[in-house]
Length: 124
Image (cartoon, rainbow, N blue to C red; front, side, top):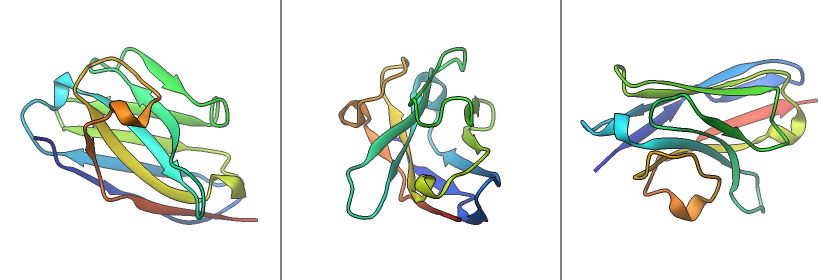
């Protein structure tokens, strides 16, 4: 069992930056691949980024490639999403997720545990 708690969301102007954190409970965190997804009002939840259990492999959606960076520290049971050059279209609730397999994945159905989400709002 893994419990996930996101933090770091907020209101930022276009071009600004935010860093989201996801704190995980459980002794098996280091064996899980982690992902970030987002859901805008009235839209489906979409993949943002994923990181392998070791942190050596990352995967990004094209819409955030080069602007967002996912990272993790297994000793701290934490994964981060550094978001730079934010755009109004990045506005959404951002969710952290854990996948039992340690490999990266962009399919939300492959993730076993989810956080409650944190709101990110980017003003123009």
